[in-house]
Image (cartoon, rainbow, N blue to C red; front, top):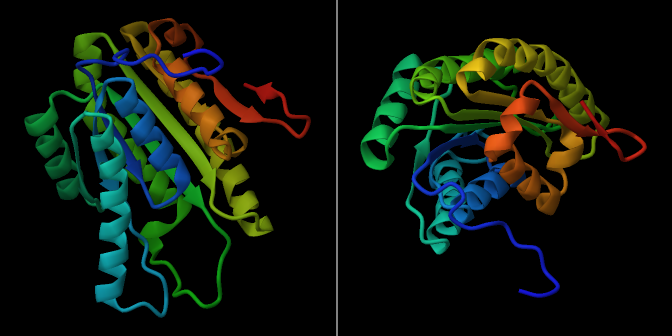
Length: 244
């Protein structure tokens, strides 16, 4: 293919990825990118109700968004499964993980997407379980659930993406707060997991805003050589350079 740069296919052949995401672009990019590289993909879809929508309409929109993600995986020829996931429920997390293992095999790649958006007065207030702290706790529980098998196989990737859904000041402030917490978390996990073959990475909101760059970065972090960079944060500074 002259004049183009395409991701190497089948680099992740035989691996299974779990992408926990909402309806933002970053989750779709992650799922389709991993599938094109050869991985089978499970999508744990986190749906947040919007004020003014009926429960029926809300569930339909959520199902349509999930179906679109799974269609993007299927187009690649890889297997994809998914469902709405209550990240804050231990029973739901374990049930989803068991289903993925049964259908697709052991999970060796986990991509968590934290989507930030400005507060909208037309929307209902989010329950306490959907605060940033609760999102982080739910994410940590998923990591605890999956890392033992990654350690046993001496290969794994934990990639966290902070995504800004809109350009409001409120959303950007939330993203910066999340990134600050996640940087320490990522470095701490890396100290324990990197010697066991599990790479831990954080992608900041600057990189998640560009689908092409995000796809390239996700593939690069899944390369065997990338484990030596475990614990790093990748984001765009105001000057457009990568920071870690």
